[in-house]
Image (cartoon, rainbow, N blue to C red; front, top):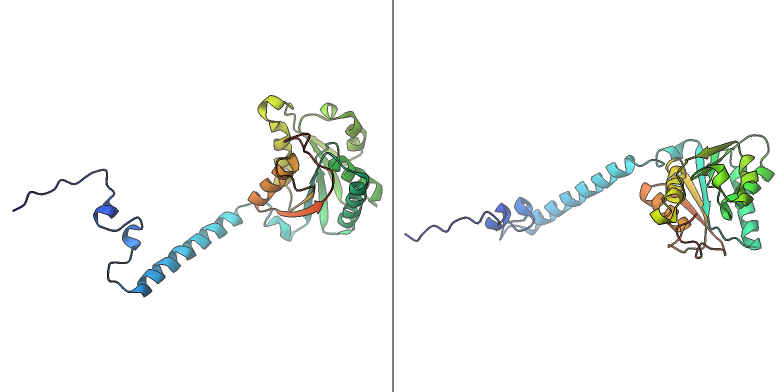
Length: 226
């Protein structure tokens, strides 16, 4: 009788059985192709169900069916043509009776231009206009403070703004407004390495609807700041 070969504890059981990386799901040698197709279909169905479950847990997806909460983000550099575009889009948002709240980031550029347009165009007190700043209002650029104070509410996240930590305060502010929105409107030149680009990417990962409005200005001179 030949000696018994000792079992290698470092080789997975599926490989010792010849099951391959699919383990027991692998169709046996000589088995029908239909069985293999059925197993593949089951695996694909499980993947679809898992993705659907993940999507159901994302904020913003269910909220889209009710009153709309809009987060506005955009490039810090804006041109005269950009201001006209921003004003047109804000007019559309204000005319939408389903829009309940609009969040603004309070930064120079598109954020403040959008808030200024909303304040000038709004009739009555709806939608509610909310400015969210990363630290305090007094820490914001001087050119934004007076406009921000005219909003219905100013939320101060009180996170110190510091380049040494990669501008984490700005990113925290952007996540805050996205997490509470059912729609993100981004006045963006398409540059991914920018605060606006990071905000758009985060919204898409969270399953929040994104509307891109192309503008000419940009964030290129201020990486990560939005």
